[in-house]
Length: 363
Image 1: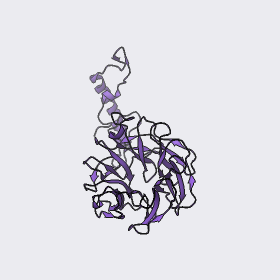
Image 2: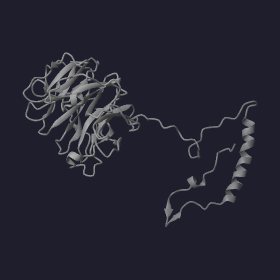
Image 3: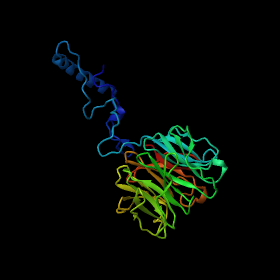
Image 4: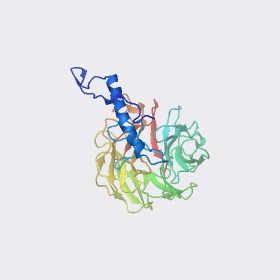
């Protein structure tokens, strides 16, 4: 076995050049061989004398400055953020109609779960990660949208709501953290309000009753509060209420539209969407509404913020890679991305030529 391993002369040379000529001394093979022979003759007797009888020589770790053919195993260092992991559900129209897919958090293994000719959108995971609630218009072929649930592999697709009047819609399902209820928005009684129901669709209960629309509920991780969007003060802002509908508090107060609240897993922050700067961008704030901070700063539309279970990443959809990302109208090529929770290290996950939207990270 060679004492130092193969000699890589190219890596020993400096990359610095002067007038196009390398500054390293010229390579003389005969000179190097002569020096190597002298070095081996001096070292081998010392190694042999210092070796205790009956023991096998141990190879030392390479010292700094010496060449090594062994590459260290990549590890997350203190202060670094691990790569995104887990699975992400999303909706896409790549098959000619809206379907719900699932993929690994690196964008691989994209799989159709619903496989239905209807409209299937807005996936949301149960807290145990075993089921997915979603919105579909498959019942009776009507345009009305109802809430369904299925297993994580797409099996067992079952309707929870069955109001078949074409003017009634059930939207924005959100599982309670204890898995016992689903909050949702519906106009099946009056204008768009937020309701609560049991997992079999029974016991539908009003949580909001206002003349203006209330929609897009999002549970706090401890189940004690629900953030939501309302137009009750003249424009779309984000509010929070107790899980029973009491104690409503306004969190945002901006002339723009603030939408799609999403609690961080540790319950300390809420991500949301706003067009206050012109484009629809993703912001984050403390749960009392303070510290509102822009995370995305790109001339394109964004939406669908979804935290990773460890709180280190946020998945979202955006028109960043559309040929006209700032003004693509109704024909935008929405793709799904992830970024670190501070807005850095944006990674594109999907590359479909049509829309991929509404990512939801499996708990």
